[in-house]
Length: 85
Image 1 (cartoon, one colour):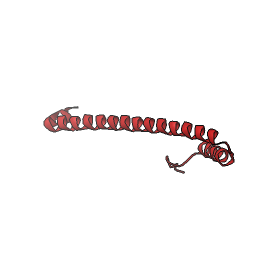
Image 2 (cartoon, rainbow, N blue to C red):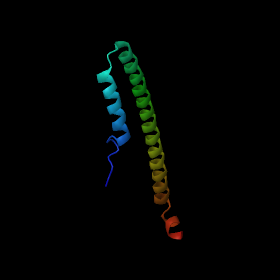
Image 3 (cartoon, one colour):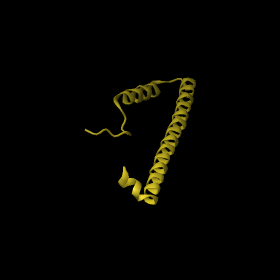
Image 4 (cartoon, one colour):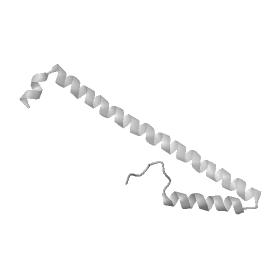
C-alpha cells in the first residue's frame, strides 16, 4: 500500500471539516473576518515553510550530485586507483 504524499490524512480531513462546519454555521461577520485572516496567515506560513524545505532538499540533492560528479571525474582521471583498491 503506497501513500500519496499529497493526499490529505485523516487528521487533516477532520480539521478541514471542523473549519468548514464553523464557517457554514457562523453568522457573525466579524468572527468570520478574523477567522479568515487567521487562516490566511497560517496558509502563508505553510507556503513559506514548504518553499524553504523544497529549497533545502534541492540544495542537498545538488551537493550529492556534485560529489558524485567529482568522484567519477577522479576515477576517470586515474583508472589505476580503482583496480588497486
